[in-house]
Length: 619
Ligand SMILES: Nc1nc2c(ncn2[C@@H]2O[C@H](COP(=O)(O)OP(=O)(O)OP(=O)(O)O)[C@@H](O)[C@H]2O)c(=O)[nH]1
Image 1 (spheres, rainbow, N blue to C red):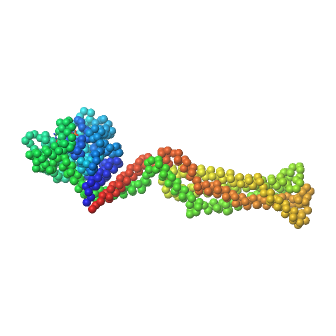
Image 2 (cartoon, helix red, strand yellow; image 1 turned 180 degrees about the vertical axis):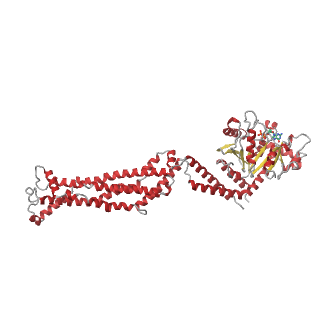
Image 3 (cartoon, rainbow, N blue to C red; image 1 turned 60 degrees about the vertical axis):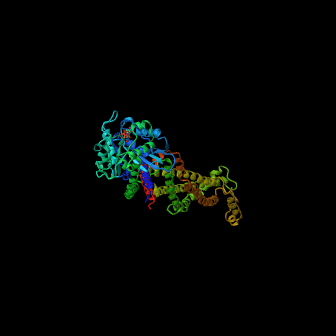
């Protein structure tokens, strides 16, 4: 069997969690409602506050005339072995109250006002107070407003019914243990507490009858008929209490002294002496604690079942609407970065292999570029007639002496000019492939499916990055081409020159060769054809070079950059964004976000409650 401490402590913790969530009853079967609670019920001035304080052993409840308790007060008593007693509110965790009579009392008043304003109205929202003390037993009690018959000055007329409704909402629940307090100096048949208890718990199973003010009974009368269960039968024994009188309170009689006095009262009483060991506030506290523990033990299986049912329902709901993203900017940023990583992973798989796409880039270099180079109108450009035209124009009125230097340069420049087209076409072709891969990767990133806005943002940033890479790449390839025309490989021409010099057949067959008779053959076809074929050979060599260097430049500027910094731009952008903008990126409609948040908090609550229950050792 689990120990009493662990069982009641368990329920205390679950109750606290429920309060944090605002889960204190209402629609459906909440966890709160499944937990056994002890609600203190009684008419005004019947001595409710006195009983509670006496159970705690300290003065701490607000005093005053009229209805002082206007919000339920969930009072959790935790027994500690030693040390000074202190109190903590759930609404102000980490603030320890040790001054019960002044500071703690004031905080209860202030917190009551915080919700009800000064209107003296009442609120269903409980105030949650934990008291840690060596002088208490583990117990959770709920102090409710005293049942009243008339509204006083400043209170709405509805307050009488409002209080009754609120008290009923607690005692109606089958899990509620009713601590029904009636003053002894009043007929038990007219007790507000007993009237209500009789209605909601006719069998008296869950009602504990408490009689206060035994000391105020008329001389010669006693309360034995009630205390011995003859006036009104309950399943549990009645407990008589003697609290401090108003005069004691005014004299500041301390609680411990009052407890002793109470015990003495019973022990020395001719009427109640035989019941002394079953009377008084200390006994009442123990009785309740024991009972609560046994009830909790009975309830555990049904609580676990409820928790499991709730967990399943919440999980199903979260699966339907999607799991929440953290509320704070950090968590949102984290989620966005996770998505980016997922996207980037898919994109890289396309480039590096594993997914189709990267091979098409190779296709550009292997087919498209060579084919385009082959189609260049070089033949036309280097046709004898054009060579003649270009060379003649370059020479002007002075014919060239040996080789038409200017003519060569112009022919080469002109030819190289054609290379820009295919070079840029390769850049563009790769650009479009990369863009297509971004689009594909986006569609294939499962994680991103839920976030159309984020998808759009990542796509926009990726495409912008690709445009930048394309610009860089264009500049680089056109530079490659320009470099070829700004500095020619002189070696090549010297070699041609030397070859034709050393080639006797050439000299023999070509009497009008440029080298032997340049001036004489200025307009000779053969001369121009020769120039054309020399230039063509040179261009062929350059073409082979560019066929290799253009792909290198394109890969360097576009593919490599896309692989390693496609999202850098995006990262820089989101780094500057505010929480709201991040939220918008994640497409979270605020209502939905709140709902998810609540659901996941609830899920967390239920899971930790289940863990708590599991961790209570059953021997
Ligand atoms: N002599 C004597 N006086 C008591 C006893 N119980 C309560 N009183 C006095 O009765 C008055 C009302 O007691 P409370 O404990 O404030 O009663 P309550 O039910 O909390 O009152 P409300 O919260 O205003 O409804 C106080 O002056 C107490 O001192 C008792 O057993 N004996």
